[in-house]
Amino acid sequence: MSHDDERIKRIVEARLKLKARHLSKPTDRPMGEGPPNRHGMPKLPVGQTVAKNWPVLDLGEKPDIALDDWRLKIDGAVEAPVTLDWADFLALPQAEDVSDFHCVTTWSLMDSTWKGVQFSTLAALARPLDAATHVLCHAYDGYTTNLSLAAALQDDVMLVYAWNGAPLPRDHGGPVRMITPQLYAWKGAKWINRIEFLRGDRPGFWEERGYSNSADPWRDDRYS
Image (cartoon, rainbow, N blue to C red; front, side):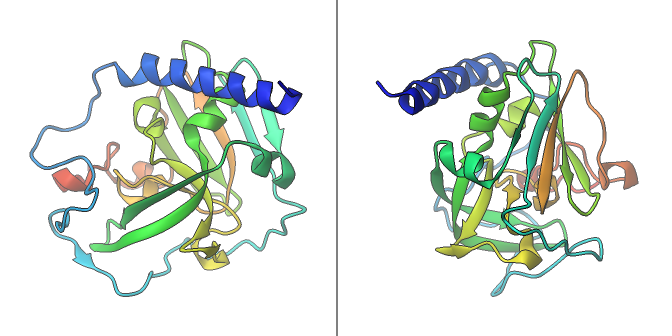
């Protein structure tokens, strides 16, 4: 077995252990009806309409990051903090997924094909401490958003660089953004550059301004 194969094997094993530890715990997600994700069902979350195009929403700044300059820092409550460059990121196990994108402003983009790296792979690389319960994601434009580890370790939570077979547009967070298909889209940071593991919860940009902490579109869980 080559050095790269052995490294990937270790990451996969660590990812499985993380998911077993965190996804077996009860969550604080609100109660209600409806599936956790659509998975091909022709149904929208309550209050949503289908978008024909992908609307652009941001804080008024669109960072322009060259691939040679892009970095992803993974730190905080972890055993092995790491900073990845573009080549490092592409050397990790890659994933593709088809999922929907639900914006709190009442539109949903359906059936997008994404390519990137699962969040769980990045977590396994850094090896969160047993005390870690949440993450705070940071972006090049200063944006932040928080997630519980139970939410972040879902299989469809990814850091993506391709959308529908093309590079992710800068307007939508390229070169790399995070997606959280089972939550409202503000939980996935555009232009992501840091994942900070936390020993407790810490609100992000919109959470500090009254948005829901759990952000479940199937429960119409928009505001706190």
